[in-house]
Length: 209
Figure 1: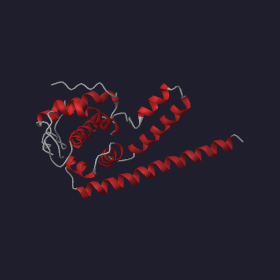
Figure 2: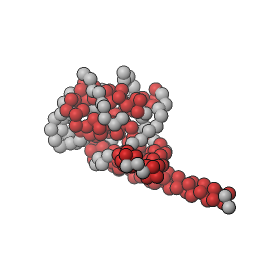
Figure 3: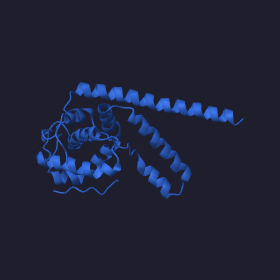
Figure 4: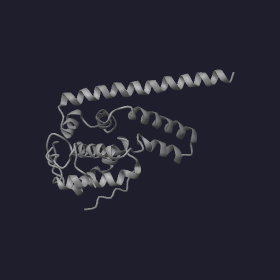
């Protein structure tokens, strides 16, 4: 079965095995793998990219996510939503991929605004948005995989903590704890970059006087 993703643009079992992820995980209807792909391919692609995977690896990982969902029998209603069920598969695939080789980090956060600014011919606005994306990327890179996954799903993709916990197979209290820690570390990373930028600006200003 082919799941080719044309939107934004071989797994081995190991310590993070995903073949056993239960397909019965959120209130709603049962979905086969083809319907999961049709409805949620964009969500999964954004999650994978926000986890630091390069665009060149995106298609292969997308194929693997939905093939695993297919082998697991699709999605059946349960505690998690279809999106967090798929994210749990993607998370384990990203972990395995990262162990096999280092991947170039790239994140899509509000990239539509950047594309819009470029389309409008506003280079100053476009440059500003790109700088913001780079700062957010560096802040995300400062988080470990588990906290990054929590932060991306809850803060960037709007999933509930209860659904994330069910999808990742962790207690709800643990999920809340990880999210609190991720928010704190992300905030500290962003503030650290701002302090560094102000310091650099002051040094440059002083040198040009």
